[in-house]
Amino acid sequence: MASVREAHFEDHAGIAALEERHGLFTTPEADWRRRWQENPAISGAQEPWPIGWVIETEAKDIAGFFGNIPMAYEINGEPVLAAATNSWVVDEDFRGQALELLSRFLAQPNVDIFLSTTANAATTAAMTAFKTRKVPQPDCDKSLFWITNPFGFGRALTVKAGFPLAGIFGPITGLGVVLANAFHGGRPSETPPEGCRLATTNSFDDRFDGLWQRIRGQTGKLRFVRDRENISWHFNRFLTNGQAWVVTCEKGGSLNGYAVFVRQDNAAIGLRRAILADYQADGDDADVLRSLLLAGLGECRERDLYMLEAPGFSPTKRDLLNQLKPWTRKLPIWPYLYKARNAGLAKRLEDPACWDACPIDGDASL
Image 1 (tube, one colour):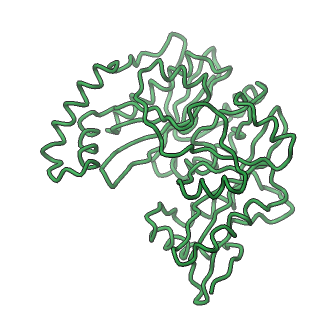
Image 2 (tube, rainbow, N blue to C red):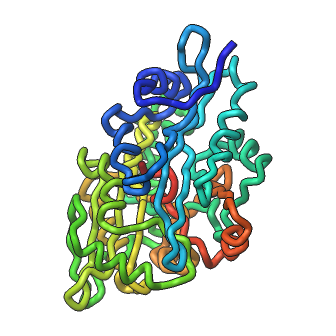
């Protein structure tokens, strides 16, 4: 027998052990607590926010967890409170109670939109049964990527393929990747367009507030609130431990755009990788966006990373990224799901033009 109850911060050790049993990433307790304790989306809230729900056995062990992360959004200047799924995991013997965790999540009365951005095939099927919908943004299941170290990438491919002598076959595969990359389009020029002044940083300053005020004035899209407070909260863990960096672009004397790159290695196959986690420019300025991506590719090479991946993003941004000759990989599932609480918001979000979903949304880069 087991019961479902609201999770508490004191459950971290049991939840981390559960995640480890299932091969999931675990988050250090201080960073895990910060997701809620320092979250601007619920700063000053009158009602306590549930950090999630657990399945607890009679022996007081944690056999299931469903995290619940609040996130501040806007659409046309109107605040939208989102709840994002995080680490839905249940031991096999208790999966009969897994749907109760999802039911608790979707029953929250003060949430405007529910988001899922890191589900697997099983959880996607369950959420779809509860009437969550696919984000209607085109090509969400096609991730773009650039190979920044062909020999390292080739080694990782060899390991993934299961060759027993990866040390021998890796360089051969790497040479093949070099040739394929050259045939595919080669290495894009990293010279920024005239007028773009680029810099790399590991923090956010007041300039980001000014840029956010201009971006939020461009109506029509559902956007995570990207003021200094929110983006600092979101990327704090990776920026603090050196696993992320921010490229900024000044044009005409003011901050006109930035991109955030986050390390997400696949240790099992030795793949050193970064993802493009956020990608913003005033008015979607093509020169700015191009400069930011090229600078990110250069930094990946400097850090000896093997690839840069860009999942998601609006058609406008994807069109620009495609000009830089990426490879494309098909994802096994549609990564972005949502459910709006009220009919008015649900109707607005049926429009693909409302979306620019990317790894900053939900828990994909937390």
